[in-house]
Length: 139
Image 1 (cartoon, rainbow, N blue to C red):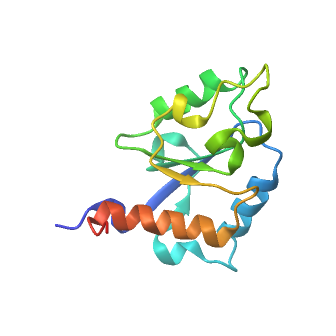
Image 2: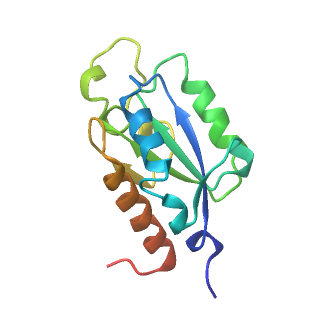
């Protein structure tokens, strides 16, 4: 039996107060140059239709309850991918008064894609690894 997630992933991008470098790279990944639709990855406009929550930026006190609400609105199982150094480890904002910690302290994170900003090739490789993990081909 083939899991439906291995054929197509609907991705919702949530930006938690980013500097927009990660967002530009995510948009570049979704552009025809990299053509992620060949893997079945499609960006959706609503978290209710999403299989994957792609989160970029540092989670601060203003957006922490919003990102939790977005995660609650997704259909389960939902996979969370932390994109960029801010979502993975808060790089520059680690000791800031306004941040709430890395994303994995707020939501269960399934995949980390580090970098400041991560390149589209790294994001594609991370998502393909997640799809292989879902297929059961984890090495």
